[in-house]
Amino acid sequence: MSRIITSESDTDNDTDSSRSSTLSQSSHSSSLRDGNRQLSVIDYSPSITMERKLEHYTRKLSQVGLGEKEDSSVSSDSELISSNHQVLLDDEESLEKVQIKFIPIGSISSMVPSVFKISQGQPFSMILAFLTKKLKIQYVHCYINNSFAPSPQQKIGDLWKQFKVNDELIVSYCGSVAFG
Amino acid sequence: MDEIKRLVWKGTLNVQIEIDKSLIIATDNNKSLYVNIRIPRETYISLFTESILRGVKDHLRKDLSEIITNVWFESDGKLLLWNIPIGALYDITSNLRIESMDSISDKDTFIQIWKIKLVYGKEFPAMHIPIINGDSQIQKYWMHQWKQSCFILNGSSKRVMSLHMNDTQLFWNSVLNRTPDSFEQISSKVIPKSPRNIPVVLHTKGQTDSLYHPVVPNVNNEGKNTTLRRLLDDFCDYNKFENGTVVSQGICLPLDLDLHFLYSVFFSCDGFLHLTITYSQDFTHDKGC
Image (cartoon, rainbow over all chains, first blue to last red; front, top):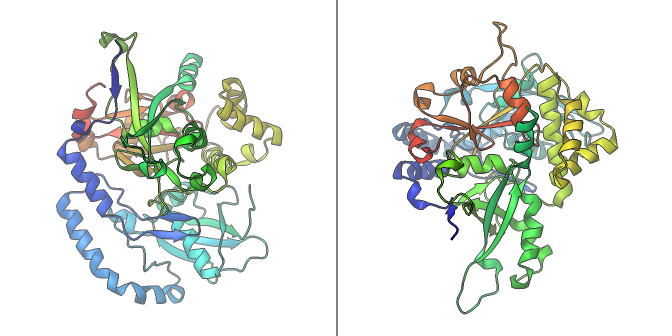
């Protein structure tokens, strides 16, 4: 008689792990839709205590009302701030901003100014959403260092640390496929 | 080393996929519908979506073409990101690990099964990348992953970008058709003998949406090769990690291993080394290691 072991084991998950899972899900900020992509900024820190999470969550919720005002100041401050995408990353480093330099490929409009700042903890999809909104186009193709398109889920901070040139992450963008 | 690579390449998972009830024609007994398949660890789960649905097409409410772009996979209610190799997904989500086949009394008939669900919906879950153009979209994504890993390894993506068209297609076909010789032949053109940095993705056990891409130099400032322990020292909460484990390709890894060696034998089909960290608090579920 054969024995079958399955991975679906509710009993294996203790209350701690299920609780942390719930917290992680509840800390998802509002989803971000970019054409066919839908992503959200998530809490990547596994070590956060519940108290810190609740405290941070409350603080971020209180910022929602200010979102629209922040968004209107985006272009003037050259800072990429999303009103709809709260950053719920508890790690302070992930709230630090890094510089992104946008370079157009082909006939697509240039971004003025070309250098923006964005929080390290934001996913790359945030840049795609920002560009489509700014350039008023439906789709945009982005490449790092004129080479590759990263996963939209990858954190901008990770990309910046790995591929920065003179402390700037070079993001080339195009309305159609440039580097297949 | 070649033997380890061969075993890694041949690694498979027994997967039982429950089909979303909203996709199935209702019957009197209202039983769930399952598809059992064996999937290679080194591939993307979405490459199997069509064949899974074809297997149950007689029970589906709608035509396959209407469904296929609106489905995704979940494990215990958590989204499985299709763009991570399925073996890494299993390491992240599964709570079962067998220390040794010798510890199993009925090992001749023993089967380990991973139960997941194929879910249908009009609204996609957060973090899911919808697949609109089928396998060609997956191929393009995979190619860009290789360009990125090539950049990390060599300082530029030139080695991938200068691959002949035939080689590029052969490379992808080697993943689809499970031909290790072609995969080894083309990947060796991309991976240098002495890389600058090691392409690593760190996952946290139980968190399918947590990805971390650390910068891992092959040789550190002291002229020594980076070890797994050093990586954990630099990027993890080591106090919390105490008694924890690191898993790749389903194997618990000794922490004194050289990461370059680890990469050369355990790198995934996307050119990255996927490591899953189990912190000490989760360790009770992973006693097998």
